[in-house]
Length: 112
Image 1 (cartoon, rainbow, N blue to C red):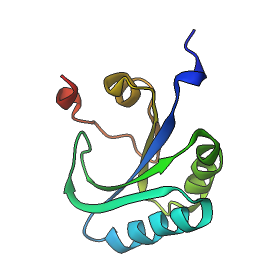
Image 2 (image 1 turned 180 degrees about the vertical axis):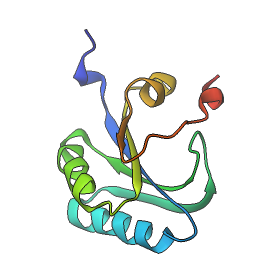
Image 3 (image 1 turned 90 degrees about the horizontal axis):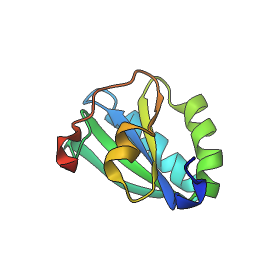
Image 4 (image 1 turned 45 degrees about the vertical axis):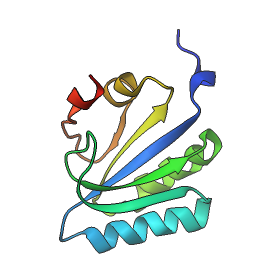
């Protein structure tokens, strides 16, 4: 059985396209303002394993307990992919991910 103590934090990636970039920016900024989470850049290109443009929210485990339900209720049809940070990037993305909205295929080849 895996221990949750190995989780140092979480990432929530908000996906968007050219038509929803402003909506995604507002959602991420609101999450940052309300919960004190770290908001990354709003990437208008695919970054890392992500199949769409995205913005990353970095959360502590305590923050994530509030941010995830808030995102579920406020994502306004945006797709959100969230995962724990355990140090095993492949497993974190492949095996432990949480999707809000339609799940998409990640490019896991970057993890070797």
